[in-house]
Image (cartoon, rainbow, N blue to C red; front, side, top):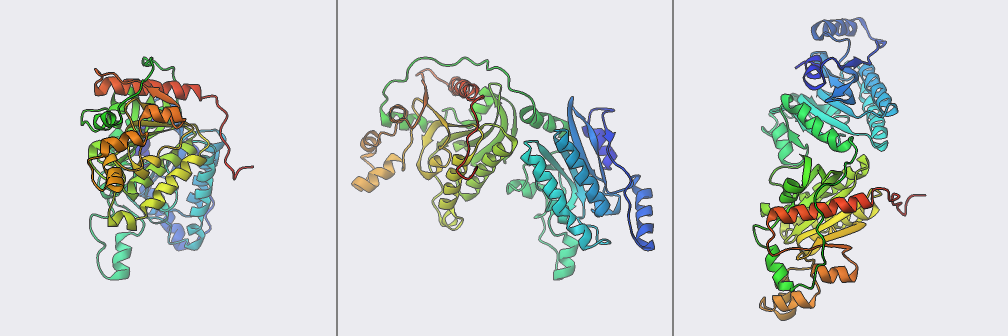
Length: 470
């Protein structure tokens, strides 16, 4: 797909306006001939096309690689074009949509072109620092310096199916090492499965994806409409709450999104232990990071890194962060220890405590151990009436204190783990009453309504400052 084809497929018809100006290229005769032939073959004067247009009515800046022009390689003129477009987008406060297809740095220009990736990255980080979205679409192939700079800095990054995506091109690897690069590694699907990119998307679906992303990142909040549950939450039996939250039909993060949110764009694999999404909870845009116990996957270091990615995303795009706690505990294994599980928990806690965007934690069900604590330290904490929080599952606490698990109900009561007890202690700020007749849908709606109410209440709260800020 050419750059122009991609633009026509993604932008609203007739909305594209080019920002490109001819650049001055000092080169020997051989290189000049290569540039002329490339322009004739590609129909463009360089390996990148920039400009502005609209996606379903929203104005965006666009950066699109033209692979037919010297394999989409980035020389000095192309880099200057990209940097100028990013700077203009920042000045005009436009989101950027980038679509790459490139072999990386242009070898004919060597180091001079190579270091321009730093300049491009600096401009993009200034754009992100201004709170403006940067959305990336990786086409086949995207390798080298392009993937290691502006191809990997997106708030949301997707790739086309089957695309070759990687840092070192397989031909270069084989030439250097005398053997082929391992198969099925540098593919869009494999990178999505490992959380390197957010998903694999057909080009025909890009307008829908961009609409979803911009709908959360750009469009203003709307007034909540879900009914907020009233009434007080009374004392509960701790062991009853523990058993209730373990029921397979209890509302989890998926039900919260299904029944209480709109415009959701998932940024993790479907079977991830931690879910990261751009969404609107009852009309309030946010970044949601939620523990998904329905997958029966232990929450290991990689899942916590995904959680921290969501936290940082909220900070960079200036959206509230909502964390959903519902976990039987973090992964206990050799791999988790060697992967730095404790350090990842600590990093999640420290990241949340230093965010300056509004933060809201939702204790939805089970809240066991460091995995729960990693998502807890928000400025506002709400909990469903039967949710609970404990350093270990009651059975584990019983094993330590009594050397058996039979005393689990007794320990659950003694440790004051219930949501009403935590509310009384000030750990939880707001309780959502539960009804005996609740279904997963009705509880999810009640929790989403409370989230929206609290997000609305803190919308005009001055941002926090961290101890490192002056």
